[in-house]
Every structure is written in C-alpha cells, then in structure tokens.
Length: 541
Image (cartoon, rainbow, N blue to C red):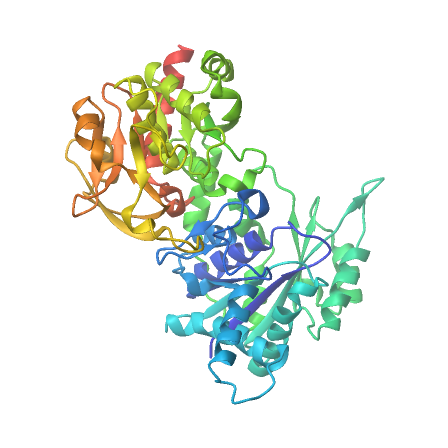
C-alpha cells in the first residue's frame, strides 16, 4: 500500500507549508523512496491560470500544460518526482467534476452531498497520483489554507477519512504551526495548542508538529508542546528563521531527524540517507564571492512571489557561477519616459537586465526602453516570453525605424504588428487553459548562444502565451541583423532571438525558469549570470 502524508497549517498563512512539504519530500527521496507531491487548493477557481499575480503569485506550468499554484514550483525544485495536472487539486476542479457527473446521471438519482461525493472525489484525485506512477512509495499532500478556514473543511475531512481507511501506519498528519515571540523574547506556545485543538475537532490528531519559530526550540518548550498537543516530544520539530537559503531547510530537518521519525511512524525501515547533492549545494553557497546586480524590469514588482521561479533560477545560476545575485527590482512604468529611463537604469548600477513574462499594456514602453538601454550599452540582457517580444518590438522601432511597431496585444491598429496573436487563438472566447501551454520542442540554430548553452539542438521547454513573433515581418527583421536562433521543428514559429555584436542579448518565447534546480542551474540562466559576472569584473577593475 502507498503511504500518505497530509501536511496542514495553522495559526496563520504563509508559514512555509510548501517548503516544509518539499523539504520532507527531499529527505525521503534521500532515503531511497519515490515521492510524489500534491497541492490541494481550496479556491473555487478551476486553476490558477486566470488569477492576477497579485492574488496568488506566479502561475507554475507543468509539462502537460496545467496552470498551477506556485507551490508546485517548490516541489519541482526540491524533489525529482514528475509533476502534471494530477498534482494540483482545487475546489473548482472537484465541484466541476461532481456536478458534471450529476448532470450525466452517474449518481443514480441520489442526493449529491459534500460527504460522501465531494470527499470521494478529493480522495480519488489524491490516490490517482500514486496510480499514475506505479513506483510511487509516498504521496505528500499539502492542504492549502489554514485549519479553521471554511474552505479547507472538505479537504481535511477527506484527509481524516483516508487516515482512518488506510490505517495510522499508512497515512499520517504533519501539522505546521507558528510559535510567536512577544516582548522580552518569550516564545508563546498557546497558538500552537489552539491550532492542534482545531485539527482535533476535524477528527485528525497530528502525528508530527513542525513549529515555525524565530529560533530553535529548546527541549523544555518541545516537551510542553508535546504534553499539551498529545504528540511525542521527538515528533516536535522547529522550522526556525534562517539567514542562508531555503534550500538548507532539508538539511536542518535532517539534523533534527524529521525523516527518521516520519519513517518510523509509517512503519518504513530506515535506510541510509544520501544527501550529497544538498551538501554540495550548500558548499557552493558558502563559496560564493562577489556580487552581480541583476535588474528585473517588470510590472508586478510589489509581490515577490509574482516572479518566484525567475528569482529562484537566478539564485541557482549564482551558485553555478560562485557569485551572489542581488535582485534589483525595477518597476517598468517609470521607465516609460525615454528621457528618464537611461538615467534610472544607470543609477541602479546593474550588471544585467532581465525582462520576465507578463500580460497587458501597462509598463510595456518602459520595458522597451530598458531593452534599448541594454542593447546600446552592451549590458547582458535576458528576455523571457514577453521579454523576448520586447526585444523584437525594440529592434523594429529603433533599428528598422518603425516607430509604431508593437504587439497586437497592446495596439490593434499598429501598421507594424511584429508580435501578433497566434492563428489558433483567434476564435478563443474562454481564457482559462486556452493558451499555448506546456512542453514543446524547439530547434536551436548552429553557431548561436542558445545552442552553446544547451549543448543540444533539440530543446524541450514549457510555454504559456497567446502571441508570437509575426511571420509577416520575419524576413525584414532578420535581414536587418536581429538573429533568429531557434524555431519550432516545422519552422513555423520563432522561439528565440539574439542581438548581434552584443556580449549576451538573448530572448526566448518559452519559460526556462520552471526547469531550474538548486542542484542543477538552468543553462540559459547560468550563462546569463556568467556574462553579468564578466561585466561586473570589468567595471570594477
């Protein structure tokens, strides 16, 4: 029988359930187990695809084109298990499936209720993840929200049923809570006690507690928590504030023997732990010297999670280049005045410019001005999705002299639509899950930076967009000098462009950030940071 671990949270949100679940997954993989992770999101949206980044952070895309919560990005960065649309379960998906079955008459006239029909649907989706991969040993299920939220009740009830049905040795509860610090540096355990009480009221007794705290909990505090929460003392762990990197958390939990306790509770024979990759990653972290400043020019700069995978990929590339990456967040809107853009960017003293993906017209001209500044001043530039389209628009305006060159997303009346809606997108009315989504192949051209980075002509990356480089202007743009460096296998779509006579100016239509790992930086991010590091070394001599 597969083993199930249900990870829940209490007291407040944003305690790090996703990182905790991912870290536990990394430890169990280090013990030789095959682990899959599932995120249960209590929102009624079918998926995260139509949400504003300000609402829920970035949208993480899987190979099969699912638009999911950003926590799946954590799963991908910490663990090796494959991710697909099956790994993301939302209230919207569950109710949509149940209502469709009811309309089809599949409940044989019975009254459709939360219990058992909704909870059965949730359970079937959780168990389907294990069935999808027969080699799965453990499924870690992260339940979004906070215990006590009305939206999370069906998921907690489904977890309670599975723990009862599978037996305590096959399904356990890991609960993450907050230990706040009050005046006088006193740590208070009462919120954790109330959180565990709320879990008990749902019928679930946590087997393991992970306490988010400012510092490591001492033995006396752990005993107190254990006594009041009906948990063994050695099953109380601390997720304390760190000054290094979240990728040290698996090692922090390992030193506290979290994986050993979990294995014992699930009746799994303890195996030798192989965490060499994580120790090596921390060695690279500690060996970093010097700093490169990367200007991220975007439109959702107020919320860090809006570009979560991009920021993490830059950090991974810093590890690969033994250099610290300082993120310089630059809102593109103030850059829209071309007379001021150069001064703002010069003042920020950046060693590289990255323009990430995005939608909508706000701040677009500011991104164009940033790209122009990077091209003219030989500053390394990396454009991702929208960032590549910005390169094309800038080139058409500044090199070809087409002052009104634009994307039809931003200007339907432009005489030079160098970026246009894909033909298959023209009849689309519903915007949920209808973009070009998921893994797709690109072929890199010989003698290009993108081929040098990948070391292979055949590139497989994930897409999320509706607009593409316009083939109507392909010949004139390439004839003017802009390098078109990767295409779809049939040659129909341009997937990458590069600036000529530039130290490193490259844009891609896909999203390479989704495949970067702390133990294996993505080659494009690696080479981008290498170019920025070279520039930083030149300017400081």
